[in-house]
Length: 481
Image (cartoon, rainbow, N blue to C red; front, side, top):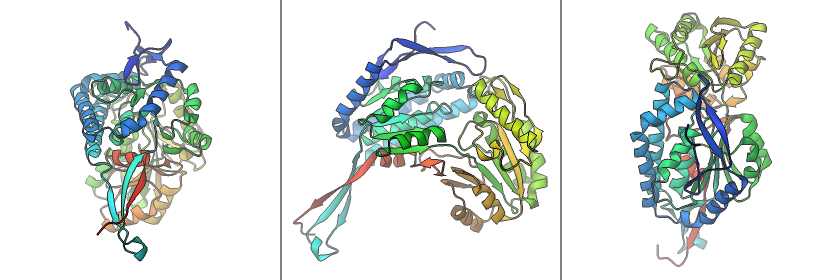
């Protein structure tokens, strides 16, 4: 590397005094050196965002929409370059990295569309009572204030997009903190935003060290916090700033429920393939990856060997290889944690059907059965390529087992029965229910978030815009309605 990668402060590219290394989880090679903002530079970014907030809210929609459209197009133009960067810094197989870029392209396009129709206002007549005669209410949405966006490592481009794009669409300044392990893809967004006509100060991308975050979280000029990451950190943030608006997208323990009517060979082959793929994609490092399979007794014995075979068919290895399905975890420490959880479960009586081996930062795709309910791997989010399979008797028992978790992000239900689908929607304590597929499906325009300990609020462009803004009513008097 000839020079450190700069960051973005109030729309301009600058460097700090110190640097940190970004290394490949696959082979440990140096991917980049990134400069760290000084305290003074962080203060400058926050001050600029706070100062521009009213002017940015008044920026014409066509300017914000054009900027978002531009970023969407430029991401598409640079897909292969950015995918290679994601794969290098994150260890994500290149085919999944390309998919992530494609999703970010859509997020910015959706945001451009929303910017054009946002805040038009809703009229409500008030003369439904005598005291409201001649009065009309007009309700519009206005920014709550500058957003502090905190993004995780597992989708280093798309989850930065989910913070930045809705903010720009709603006319809300944003300070984005990418994950220290994977800052490069997020900084690329800055390259593209800098090519637009957005006002200086409306956005900054700061690779701030984690130990500097408490001061930013506490800063009163940042009244909205959008955090994606672990349950522990997310709720610690919320608890520390109870008067701020926090959107938290936290952990999951995704369940795929396979019911008795999903019983043909074709059905079970499809379910097994989807379960194997999406328990292991991104190395299992997705909040909605399949961690638990809950199978009805009627299909369990035919489904289980199919799942094991499909898991063993997953291609592991170099993330730069187009054929690779499962690459390394983000770090060797992450793989060691997964290893310890599997070892604990096996010691407690779980049966290991395949996998269970670690090589550096890589962990082999793993299937367990007979897992005791009180083991860590049953109770917590594994965030690794590990799958548990449980047998239950009937729909009610299956839904109860799926709900037997402190998390509630998404669930998948394999059934052909529409009545069961609606019962699942009512019964399952999650933010999203996917019928006929795994819980790992997410469309970036839909409301996305969880119940219980999986967080509060919703992502998805329109829904994040609602979180970043509040309703303000204008009452007009003396009208002939």
